[in-house]
Image (tube, rainbow, N blue to C red; front, side, top):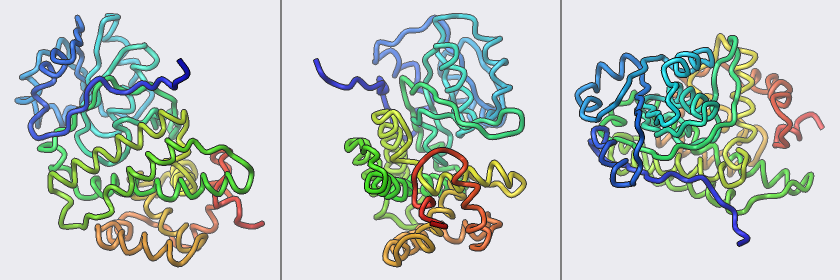
Amino acid sequence: MFYKHLEIPVFVEIDNRVLGRVDKMLTSSHLFFSHKTLVTSPELYTLYSHFIDSNKFDSLILIQGGKVEEYSLLKKQCDNLDTLFIAFGGGSILDIVKYAATDMNIPYIAMPSTLSNDAIYSPVARLTCNGKKKSFGVKPPIGIVVDLSIVNKSPKQLILAGVGDLLSNLSAIKDWELSRLSIGEKIDELSFMLAKEAAVSILRYSEKDLYTDVFLADLARGLITSGLSMIHSGNTRGTSGSEHLMSHAIDEYFSDKSTIHGIQVAWAHLLIEKLLRTESEYNMINSYFSRIGLNSMIKQYIQFSEIDFMKMIPLAKMIRNRYTVLNLVGR
């Protein structure tokens, strides 16, 4: 049959107090493994051991995450081919487990402790290798568990970073459409649609909603849908455009001023709308960022001016061969 086959999770759970029900989810999904390894940080294990220990894990690996060098720790402790990794943590923990699971051909479950970016279901891992941030292609999880009673304890800046990362889809799809019109790049319509709808799903909320279950559940669904967009198209076109190139340029060339990914992306998105697109587009994003609390967070965390932004564009264009609105600068 002529269909595209996608690797989608066997189960997705978004609810309160689900961290302790992982074993039941596996059983009800008819998933059985001889060895289950939990990978998390020492801090999270201390905070949530009473929930974690209600599951039957065969081994525990405590790491900080975020570095390729930590892969050796996971590989050393997991020589059983019938192993399941359970990654519980932020993007740094999720990304190193994704990287290790892909290299070792081991399935994994993603259990985010916060919703700061689309690492939950993204087929990309951003890790530090020899002091430099790099992107690696990875396989998706077989299950996703979002415990809202844990996520709602996240610092405000991390939740808003997730908002910034998700809203950047609206910038990325504009770049994709521009590339289609300028150089004839093909658009994957289903991927485009998923990326757009994922972002639009949270536009009705404001700052007072940030810690409500309904908002956090929609943010989680949006970030997961963004991942599905990437998996369907086989690339990050619908979720990573000029705004991500600017953020990666900060990580690459100004690492001493680098900060939370989603905040950097939101800053770049805002200035791209203001300086390179139309006034109406800027007004819409600026109004939403003000309403949700992102503008004040950008002022707190970003150490670059509009002049710095313009000077950074040539560096951002060198990050990867991707046609965006940045290509129109200096023509």
